[in-house]
Amino acid sequence: MNNTLKRCPFCGGKAELRHVLGYYNEKRGKHCGVFVMCSECLTTSDNYSSELAAVRHWNNRIHVN
Image 1 (cartoon, rainbow, N blue to C red):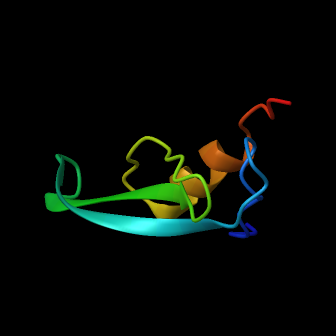
Image 2 (cartoon, rainbow, N blue to C red; image 1 turned 120 degrees about the vertical axis):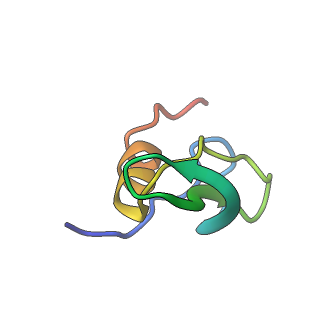
């Protein structure tokens, strides 16, 4: 799977993966999460348990014009 993030659907800015501590995943038992953040307008996604899930959800968002 391609982990390339699409640009922000709101402003076209560069999107980046971010990791968060303190997010508990019962299956993995880890206190971490992954989300995507636009470096321009600071729009963020929800927290996900893997980078793959965060990328998939970000890239499938509907663009607003």
